[in-house]
Length: 88
Image (cartoon, one colour):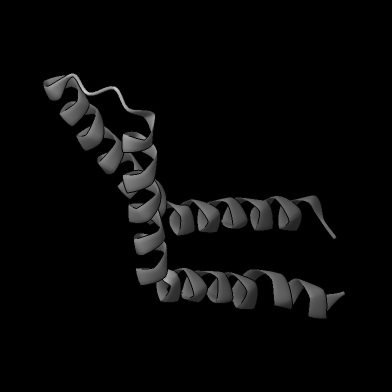
């Protein structure tokens, strides 16, 4: 396999991983900021208050966007990985 093909597949794989992880990481950031703001305003410093809502929100977004994530990964494998495997 040529280096250009390898690095192109690597670049596309990193981009697919970024797109797949963006919804979950985005909601974790938003919920974390909201909980942090709530804690700063109310002076409640409970550790489970930050962990549990963030975990639940991330699980919900993961469940909702699972079809989107699967389509991105299927497209990546069909366009990038499978043609290289069949060419070898």
